[in-house]
Image (cartoon, rainbow over all chains, first blue to last red; front, side, top):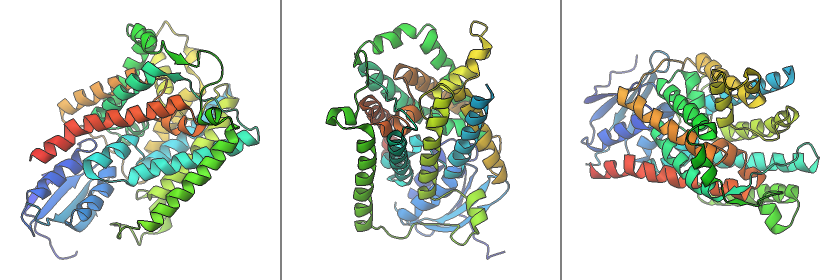
Length: 83
Length: 350
């Protein structure tokens, strides 16, 4: 186990179709303060790859991409503070 | 009889596997440009088109295939494909995207496919047939060979396809070299090759080449089964739908393009199961309605335009058909219009 990362907020977008996991996560990150951590729970494979890529592009810091069970993933992203 | 079953199924299995591993979807490819300025899947589509074009050109030169480009259908290609483009954003996937996601267990994709199949059938032979006939009234040329980039240049198809693929490839390589961006986030840089193939999504270059190669192999195999055209999605779903229609003989459904779809769904399911990505995923109820409506618009548009994003863009553009290029542009514009209303505008307001 790596050191525990505390999430400021959790967003569950499991079951959502393309591209809602990305759109909802990015919209949430945009409203968060710098340094706050968003925990995203998702199960859509395309978004598991696309979301970290785009979040990094916007300056957010991708902390972990962790596979849970099957396609379920937990992604932790530290907000850049775009507010 | 066993020939088309076997080759259609095998091509489908490979296609479904590659679609799932590469997360290949033209809806994402076109929509992501305007919603998140992400060009990854667009590059995949571009590479698949170049590989197909080069392969089709070489096969035409060596008489392995006879190109069969679609004619221009002004109403169908412009209006039908535009509606298709709007539909795929609502459906959350292009024709091939929703097909492979059925194999992944995504229920939203299943309702989209249901809408696509039902509406494609009523547009092809049901109460919407007069609309289709009206949209397809103006056809250029009325008879004879279709208008292609090669026919406009008055050059052999193989010359333009091979030359065009090489020139476009070089231009792309030149600009890609000049605009080398920063490091792309990659969570699986140090994974083993086996994991990179079976566990994680493929890099865009691998997916583009794989889809291009499958499209090349599909052409002569489909032609040998009496269907002289490369990959296509909508016609296969129509044939699956017709299986439960008493008015259509069952044997009419057992064609190459139908087996291709069966193979695609199964291939995607196998890829998803190996990667542990298979799961029945049910979106909120209103999403099921939205994807059904989206799929229905796609089915209507694809039949009016005689092709979906695969038939027109992946298969038609490398055959240099002007009609397919018009349809392709209309699909992109339709998807941008829908994406702007659904994602760009609401995100800007927040």
